[in-house]
Length: 74
Image 1 (cartoon, rainbow, N blue to C red):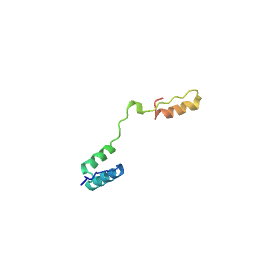
Image 2 (image 1 turned 60 degrees about the vertical axis):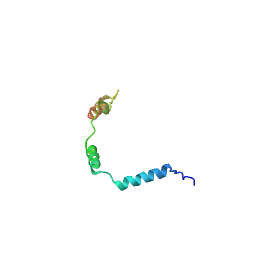
Image 3 (image 1 turned 120 degrees about the vertical axis):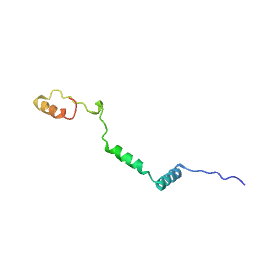
């Protein structure tokens, strides 16, 4: 008798893996850790603040520059 070969394609593999994952469930500590991580704001680095430059904008440009200074490095 010839041994039967076992073939599995990618779609069947992922379907089976998803079913096993759903059946076992996600541990509670993992969900709590992810929720705590999502609640913490990401620290901003020095490159996270955009730079703005105004050239030759006159009096109205100075007012716009002052407004932009609250949100970016001018």
